[in-house]
Length: 244
Image (cartoon, rainbow, N blue to C red; front, side, top):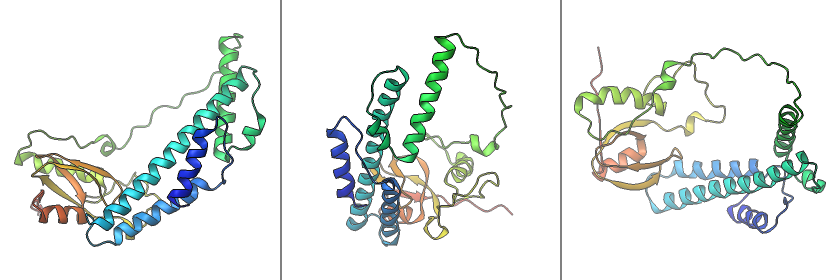
C-alpha cells in the first residue's frame, strides 16, 4: 500500500457521504509499508541526512493519512449507529462495506445504545455487574519524565532513572511490562541520556518518535540521533559513574 494509493482512498472517502468499499487488509498493508520505511531509516548511517528526512516525512504522511481515514470512516459509522438506534432509515449496504473491526464497533455501540435507551427511556432495570477491585500497578508505571526548567547536576541521577524507565533502553526493563511481539530486537535502538545545549526544531528519531528539544532539557534520545546532535554541539551526553 503506497502513499499515493492510500491518499487516493482518503480523498474518495472525503468526497462521499457514504462509506467507501476498501480492501479488508488496507490498514494491515499500511502498517507493513510504514514498518518497511522505518527499516530503511534505521539502515541509514546519518539519521539527519536528506535521505533519512525524506523517508521520515513519508512515514509521517502515511501515519497521518491512515489516522484521518480511520477518523472519517468512524464518524460515518457512528452516524449510522445513531440512525439505527433511533429507528430511522439507513443504507444497509454501508454496513456491508464496513471492515470486520468496524462492523464489531457498529454492533457494540448499537447494543450499548439500546441498553441505555432501555434504562433511561423505558425504565428497564439493568442487571448488576460486579466490578473487580483495582489492581495496583507496578510503581515504575507511575513514573514520568518531566521537562525540567532548571535542573541541577544533583538531579541528573534521578532524571536518568526516570528516563530509563520511560525509554526502556537505558535501564532494566520492568518484569511486569510485556514485550510487544512486533518489536524486533534488531530494530530497537539504544538510548542515551543527554542535556540539551541549544533549542532545536521538532524532528523524528529513528525510533519513530517526534522530539522537540529546548535548551536545558534532560532527555533520552536514540543513540544514533544523540551522536549526530552531540557532534553538532546541540546536546551533551550525561555520563553517570557506576555504583560499585
